[in-house]
Length: 234
Image 1 (cartoon, rainbow, N blue to C red):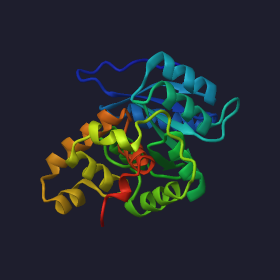
Image 2: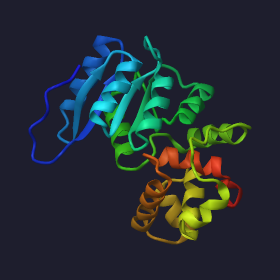
Image 3: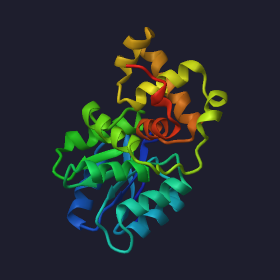
Image 4: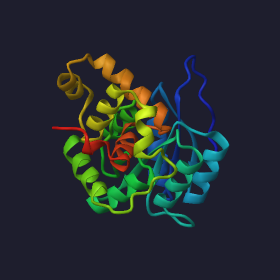
């Protein structure tokens, strides 16, 4: 379902809402459209439709339910991230299961939003991802990334290998990426490296761009896959 576009002076971030439950879909799109900086441009009732809508609109973010007909949310996320690596995906979930959430990160998700979250919590997660921040708290992010480090067969999706990383990122960018991979927030990175928060944000943006990922969480996943954490000391 394609929705009527906003008429605002600044361009809001475009979001596709994918959920097979009409009441949940309606609640999410209404919440998003009440925000001047966000716009729900389309609704999907299954994973296949979510992929097709991304092909049509290439949104900045998809709110993706997991259990949907025709194609589940994780498989739809894999397809979207393969075709549109710059599009972020926030998974909608009813349970905070580390095994499942680590699979979501491997599929390309930027994080998750619980279906029982408040409106404020949902909007906060959406905005964090769109602004290059993590939608995962540090403790959970660390747990999930440790699970990925223990995985003998991480999904690389064509990312550069560890040997080529030195030619892709500067030394400082590699340091920042390693700390992002450990779940550090920008202020923590700034304190550890004795640089300003604005400089950290600049490095994070550069890393995201150079790695061809959509968000901070997927940059952290790449850090695990590339072995950057092996060189980053606590």
